[in-house]
Length: 75
Image (cartoon, rainbow, N blue to C red; front, side):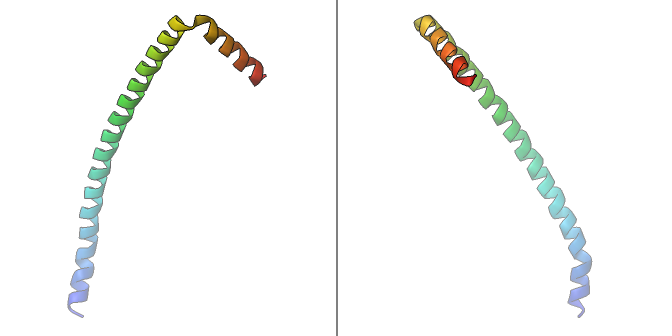
């Protein structure tokens, strides 16, 4: 019975320490994830632009036909 009250009194303090530690870990992970996401999007856009430029130079007429067909199908 003596151990139990002391454990109860320290439990909130331990919870607070755990919570702040979790929050700091989450913020670090979120920051890392956001940086990773921005880098990934940037790489995708650069690759996409390069791919579009290459395909436009190689097959300009084919691209126009594909675009026309896709718009007709959407309607």
